[in-house]
Length: 366
Ligand code: PLP
Ligand code: COI
Image (cartoon, rainbow, N blue to C red; front, side, top):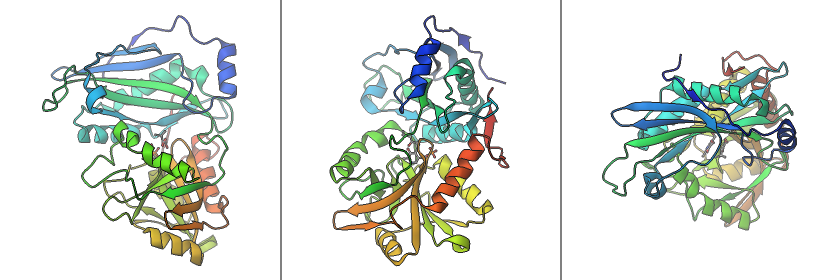
């Protein structure tokens, strides 16, 4: 049951079947959008109102809207998958709703009822279901976001008007060259998040602040930036916009370590899924901490056999090579490791329906 009724206006000029097929043949990532979007307004004292499904298009905004000046914004990311029998599902949408509400608390923004969040996703996916790709590994990326529309430049008065929007983008592989291992740069000039800051909130400012570090990684010939803790620049936190998982040992001695959620890491839903999936496959997982020195010596001694980043967009992205200002090393043989690939297959298997879903993660839409 939705808490609001949606006012529905269908697009008069949806993409033709041929246009859509052309886009779906090579969607890239985050470049194309479906025919519709959802918008829901919020005003203090009134709550959520004016829920709409409408044609995808520009949103008229007052230049004094708070979001343009003070970045009061947050977003989420999840995917809709087309399973072999044609069923369209999404993955753990209530977990995204809960995380959006935790981000909202940190950013002094209103929480959205979880069911309204999920209803908005379902309505958009049902309406634009023809946009859910059929190609293996492709999906419809869903991007819910919310921002302050209050027209005011004062910073000592909290915004009281917000807009929640959901858009959808057919997506191929996040990394154009597939799942080849990435090289990573240990950033010591820039950090992503500090204790007490906004690191665990999914807010646009964290990403704006990360671009210079990512650009430096590319200058250094690397694909992605590794974020270290802000205080000591010693403890490993995340890679790019993914959580990190370290694989120790092999065969029956395999175990995983992932940096604990200290408040400066984004609590990834893929990470959380790995924490539940791996032990059921007989691979113990520990949430702890690992320093750059331990990462290097672990790889050199052979104790650390694989490392991968995990997130919705890329799923699992093996790390093959690490470079810092005064050091450089390879992980395993620099290739995609067997444990990383097994975990990837298991997770994708659940999402696309090839494997059973004992966790109730898959949420049927159509
Ligand atoms: N870390 C950061 C900084 C992210 O932006 C994301 C992706 O959204 C993740 C980790 C992975 O989170 P999830 O698995 O929920 O996509
Ligand atoms: C993810 O979904 O894994 C992401 O990192 C999203 C990113 C484009 C911000």
